[in-house]
Image (cartoon, rainbow over all chains, first blue to last red; front, side, top):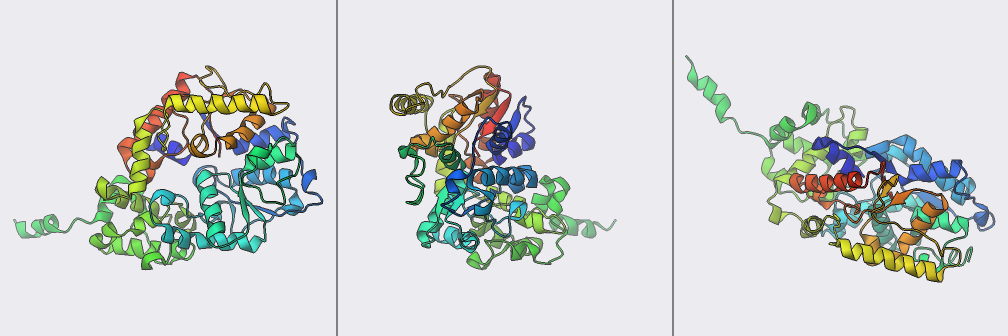
Length: 185
Length: 243
């Protein structure tokens, strides 16, 4: 996302299309009634979620308005009362430590030391799940939980949307914990 | 004519910082540091290897070029831009870092990042995991067949490749087709349910871009041009990131 936007500008490349994040589409489709998601599945379970604001999408690309769209989608899907923000958040959020090529750079000790900021932020929310709408964030935040025995799970947004819609197959639940493994099956 | 005085300027050591300033808009504000430390106090890379963004910039300002150019800290900063966000003078420390990365001989940059960039240059897919157009098509069709046959209610699920004129050109991180293809399915279900008019491209679909991270401008530009062409060849209205 950022690499494309920044590259188009830096190399002065003409283009004839819009650049969109699917987060904005999810939000539009929910508002238009095209995705009939709700948080009924979590009413009694009361499983707590937090969300990672990816630097590349929020701070470096679309800013706080996109962070609000992200929260609208997340709260609709998991229930407002089951959502806890990290602090700081939105454009002021900390990078997880998976960005900038760090995951491939061959410095795992430094990468995990960097990630302690993120790990502590997540732990302070008390959330059982961290939603990560970015692949680098997903890989890093998942690794941090394993490495530091965080006990939280790391999930993509599409997993939760399908869970809420009751269309998440058994084979699509690799990142869910035992508390959600059977929900909606 | 006092030629000696003019020569003084000519023999003055050329600082790396000045080189970076010459290529950034407004010089990246690199001379405006108030030394307040707002950058360092909110940077997760502060303290790793006894370095932080404020210190890095001060070293650059003092001309300690050898120290910053040889520092691995340039690979531990993720260029996340939180320091700019916090900085009262909006100093572009991440661009200083980017140019430190770029100054390293290619063979001395982290092997994993170089390998990912090189893999992305192998095919027009731009996949940093080296997925070819054929392999990509095969995985999409294979997973789609499996879902249609095995999941009730999704017998007509669509995952088009190279659908000319589709509204949305969807990209995908290579991790999915290579290591966890079943993770693509929830996304397809959502797109189908929402009635989205979308397509993958056989070219230019890979979302990742390690050539930027390794500060290889020529390769980064090649990847972007390949992606732009892929979207425009299919006459799509929007390039849609799964993130």
